[in-house]
Image (cartoon, rainbow, N blue to C red; front, side, top):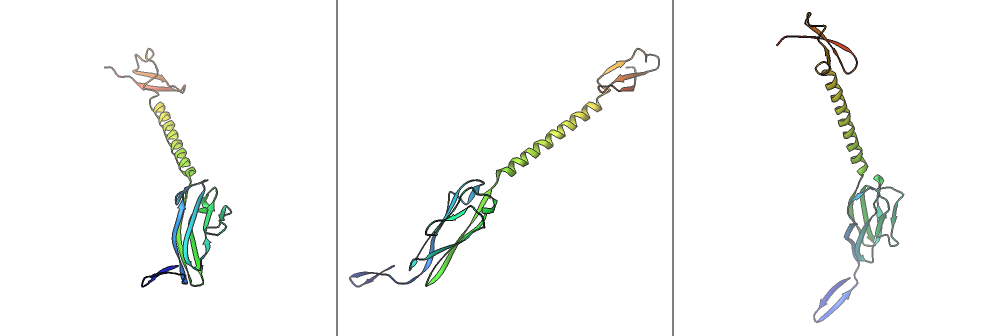
Length: 170
């Protein structure tokens, strides 16, 4: 409807008007955590009143309101991410608005953290094994009494193996 002023008179005229989308809003936000609920609302004006039609990503958890102006999603998942288009139309034309919805999945972040921890644990274990193997004859039990005349001794490593070592005088 339009207001027209003709001299001292103010007229309210109901003239035919093509529709226009005035508001396209996502509640609570356009980035939605996996499993959360959200709504996309479309508000338009035109004369006659426009009809609403939606184009949304195909998913079984998408529902529209009785007047078709709002799309509701319960328990968002990866199928709900994408572009939501509200198309309004009447006898004088059509107009559309669109919004992109992102659905975040924290399970991927948790999986990456677990994988990183596993790599650190394996690396630490391999480093400890290398350290123990490389210091086997540096720290151990030495039999030097039998080696006094030959300058050679034996080392009993942690793994039970016997290693030969060279003795030097200081």
